[in-house]
Image (cartoon, rainbow over all chains, first blue to last red; front, side, top):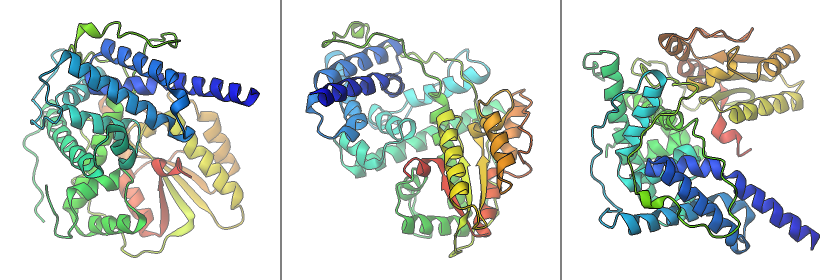
Length: 181
Length: 239
């Protein structure tokens, strides 16, 4: 009995300790701090409610991100019924207006990430911010590993195009010299 | 999607930078990097994209709301999705700007035997927990292999150099103690990353004994050429 209580208490602490990491990914997905905060709160709430359903303790992290993904989907269904979840449109050429210095760097990255199609954003954040394996991401988002890989490929390609363009412009570089093999 | 002359494609290169390939396939990619500058450059770009993501969301803080006791309502979700890209001040912009890898002509030696007693540990982000993992690993490895001719180098680039900077790193005492304790442990800061900091107006003062003078890429490639074993922080966490 005591060990069960301790385990439950430990699990609760682990779930609570996941807040910042969940928030970072939620922010990368939705781009809105208030919304990200609410999504994480909802995720933690559901996580605590359903903790008894978690069979493998070492899957806690991936399990929480599955809940977060479902909360996000639910929100999109409620508030953005016209959003195409598999939208593969090319990302827009977005630029923040007034960011400076290091804040500019962060703003550029977030702006570029925000311009990516939603499903690419989700995969990118899970792999790059949380370091999940492709298999874990496939499990969390309930998509095939091949889809994880192709979305990641497209996301990074867009990100590189956008941010390298910004980088060159900010340094006043001319068109880079192409290497000839 | 591009397929290179070696048969490698972009999906495989992405999997390589994410540490998702098995050792045999990793070797194939490294050989491809040796033989094809275009592959080498693309891998470099993909790593840079990972750095961008980490930097862009490195210093995110959430409100310290109490842990819900029961199922909470979506209190503020009704506000919808406002496209907010408000930047939060962060510690470092790392090597976002002016990061170049097009001029790498160094080679890796295909089929080079790796010496498990000579290890180069690579860290490229400013997460203190990652650096602590590197230091723990280095210390344990050196302690367990005291009389086996071990050599360990910790190579830091991008945000990782901040962990070797006076006034920016919480590990100064530990790095100094380890350096004094083990003469076969060395810390190397990437020359390009230091130059990028200077471009941002930061004069990086490194811990005593930290070496610089080459880029991280060049140094690591040279070590691979010399037969050293390469370990990246991502892999250490699984050990």
